[in-house]
Length: 268
Image 1: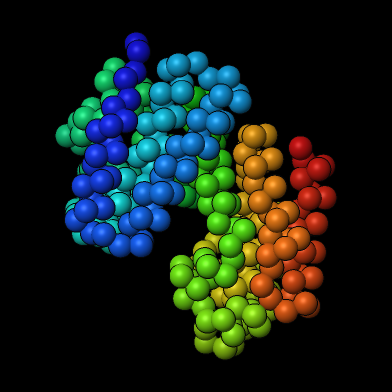
Image 2: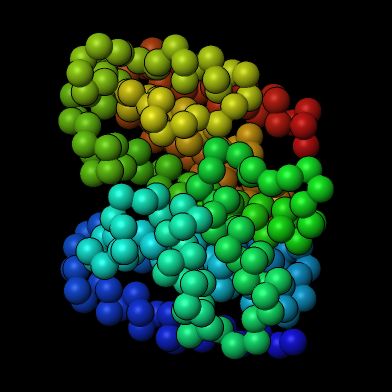
């Protein structure tokens, strides 16, 4: 069945939420959502999805941070739930058929695919049963890659992100010092996890250099070639021109980047 994504209705919803809570945080979140849509459609084109598949990608990318927009606007049913929490997603998009306001022609299976992809998009790794339907795996990977690709556009502006999103001062960024002053450079756990090929949890980030390494860690988990190439280009810009730390710490971050490249050349 043909799916008609009501793009204008979705954009109007985000405009209304933005009007209720005009802020830089809201502007950045809605802008991020649009970037994820763009990257998602690039991936869908590159892997040759049909019209049905592309419609699912467009809808799930538009809705992947839906709950977070409600949280920023002060309209979330439970502001303490994570924006990809299953209960949160079901409350605002599925329990009362709200998702049908944003698309026509969705089957129950389509809705489960979208729900699963949204719930999985912010996890450190996809958590699906080994025998999960391949459609669930495919669309989870597309959304995760699109989200990472959009996030990676900001990797080229580390000072902006570290100051505005993480609250580090110029001095803390230059020296890569944690806010409590206890850790300088790269945290041992972050470095160990990265060198063993793991993505980095936000909760483990203590210093500005930890953040840069955590972003490089996304490369380990990217699944589609088009997303990998896009992210690799932005990572190369960071490594070549944009690292804001002292020379010694910059060299550590560069070493992590080249280690990841060696690992990924073997894997891919």
